[in-house]
Amino acid sequence: MTELTALTAAGTAASIAAGDVSAVEVAQAHLDRIEAVDGRVHAFLHIDAEGALRAARDVDARRAAGQALGPLAGVPLAMKDVVVTQGLPTTAGSKILEGWLPPYDATISARVKAAGLVMLGKTNMDEFAMGSSTENSAYGPTHNPWDLSKIPGGSGGGSAAALAAYEAPLAIGTDTGGSIRQPAAVTGTVGAKPTYGGVSRYGLIALASSLDQAGPCARTVLDAALLHEVIGGHDPCDSTSIAQPVPPVVAAARRGANGDLKGVRVGVVRELAGGGDAAAYGGGGGYQAGVLASFDAAVHTLRELGAEVVEVGCPHFEYALAAYYLILPSECSSNLARFDSVRYGMRVGDDGTRSLEEVMSLTREAGFGPEVKRRIIIGTYALSSGYYDAYYGQAQKVRTLIARDFAAAFERADVLVSPTSPFVAFGIGERIEDPMAMYVNDLCTLPASLAGTPAISVPCGLSDGLPVGLQVMAPALADDRCYRVAAAFEAATEQFRPPAGVLA
Amino acid sequence: MPDPIVPPRISRAEVAHLAHLARLAVTDDELDLFARQLDIILTSVARVADVAAADIPPTSHAVAMTNVFRPDRTRPSLPREAVLAGAPAVEDDKFRVPRILSDEA
Image (cartoon, rainbow over all chains, first blue to last red):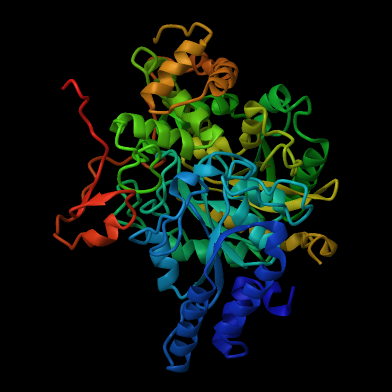
């Protein structure tokens, strides 16, 4: 790790703007770091050194010409491989899209490019974002920079690991049930899921359309906020995009950094503070003791910063896991029907004797991994005639009950807090054979996903030497509250860095 | 009120049927594995039926919106060659597909 890769995104941009360092030097330092460590981390599926240096040269040229640069111009960024990037391989972690070059840019790809960010490459992920460990990638797992034998979380394990390994100061993630926040928690980084509709979904390879939300990943709260403002805002190409200004997240992060939370009411969600489904499905463990101890200490810190801490009850949160694992498979079984061996991606068995239907079935069998097939079959079942009302319909009603729980809780509190995940990073291979044990990783992140409300994960301690995340949740469109509280907390706690020896 | 859900005991044959509907040519081993796992998963998720009553409306977005329109302006589509470049098989500037009709048709 050199001085340049250790900088924050804000610090990097300031150095480039001041002329202390060129964007090309910054890009090259990160490419060198990737070269040195990614063989062990495997955060990236594709590295675009040429494109990164070209974008960096462009920033340097614009600066030399006296043009105004955006607040993140020249800062390197790692892009999750579920986001389409024109002319750059985009696989969503699946064999079925191996070799595909998208003919267009997602809105967020276009926005980061227009802001002068330097895209280093595409990051590893669970196939089609289905998973909590990145073990479901068709291209092999990503390793946690804190301990290479551990998972980096998922589905956005590649983006989170790239940050923790200092391969990039910023990354894009997508969060359907926790895929930004849980990887952030288990890698000691920051990840925010914006209000649903706050960031365009145009050009995201869809998992569950009513839940998918792209967001920023970073090593500091302010850096995440700066990226949030670059990618956020209305997009006419996404009919669920909110036609309102981006919440003032950067101002909130700066305000929070002064460490004063006087007058802020923080609600501790009783149902997410231990026990419940995690105990039932957690492989016998429930919430890990170290996670709960870090969380309790974090609440104490918030109180010391002046926050008024209250306990709130959200009785329907215990149904979140069940509702989520009906809604998600239902929507993904429909969304993934587009992989039909006709318009893009793989085609298998087209030998002139087989029908379209046979070729389609053979292609999907060969191209999808086990978790994807499992969820497609569950979704097909849940959407079947006769079951629709009992499963998908009921699950959508549970969302209403969860949203009402949030609304009642936000009467009494400005933000809600919980651990981000019941567990710290577990060993690669430990849970992959037991789908329910894997699903329970998302226990704390699912309620905000189902309600569409914003949430952030910020590092809050270590348990057995591995990072624990604090989740801060806010009402819809009040993303700035998440950033303010997370920044205040961050300013009051030590910085968590992976042990230097792991990637020495 | 929807009918109470009978604990799903999903059979191997049912999984095979669902896989066919989803156009997945699953193997015999996968059928055994998925039937076992789906039974556990569906039993776990069936509890959604316990809570939501008939008078609860469904939710799909945090910010209510209806009838979203954008200005109807013509704009260039993607170049044909750029789109076809990603296709597994192309003929005469079109997607080429395996036969759709059976021999008897």
